[in-house]
Amino acid sequence: MSADSNISQQPWIQRNVIWLAGITFLGSLALYFLSFNGPLSDKQGTWGEFGDYMGGVVNPIIGLCTVWLLTVSLRQNQIALQQAKDELNLARQALEASSVMQARTESALQRQVEIADQSRDMANAVAVFDNLQKRTRTLSQSITEMVKDGAPSVVMDDMKNNLDRYTVLAVDLGDILVEEAERIIRVNKA
Image (cartoon, rainbow, N blue to C red):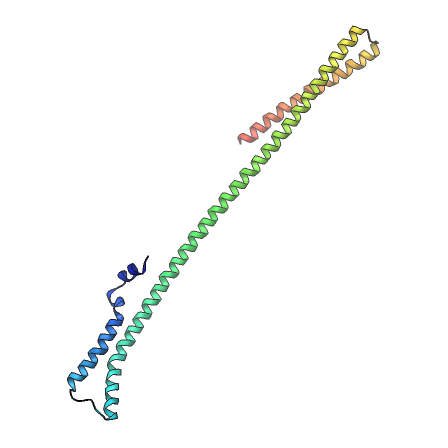
């Protein structure tokens, strides 16, 4: 708000209190001179009486104006304090909302890290599985070639046992990969 709009929203008496005090002073002065018209006195006692008269008339009015301005000031301070309190409450609410949002963001980021770790682990397991399958094929091809070349049966039996073990490992690893993939999918849906 600008100063002009603040002044126009104040009560009439509040905007014109200085003028009222001045008019009261001048009115008291005029009333005195109208009642006791005559030349200015040279006597000190007469001036003392004049001072008593002015002090008796003007001081209570100025005192009332002062008390009134004090109450207006206190009321304005009360309003300002309430506004500050309201603003602090709004700031606290915004801070709480920000904290909740930050906690949610941190939770989402943590979940993304977990998913990335699971994806990496799955990719590593698939790579191991592919490597195992490749070795099994290579071993199978080697056995086929050895049979064609007429390799001794002891060597052939040993190679077939190794092939069987690789095959069992590949099947077991494949089952483990499928179970882990299903578990990850279930967890990510939840």
